[in-house]
Length: 117
Image (cartoon, rainbow, N blue to C red; front, side, top):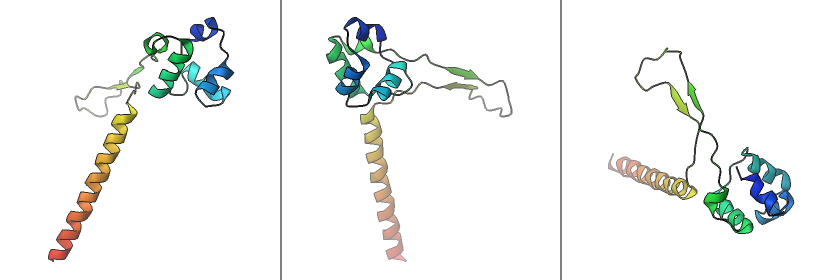
């Protein structure tokens, strides 16, 4: 979520902020309300437009913890679920690259095994 008062204080409309992010006003509005994720690159653009640091505008959504009293499973893992996800895109891309590499290695090993039979 973006700190709404900063945008209003600077006299910047949602339409202008949407243009800065290269999106439509309705999508920006959802970002401002916290309904749609704001990516790190977008935080940078917003901070520049508002002439503040990213930390000054970035609001973290409240972390929601759900407690499940249904003890159908008795596994000591706890019955808490954290709904707060903030995984950097670079980490996701690195993991996807690693998965691709592993798939390639698996394919090559299967091919090697098949040739030895």
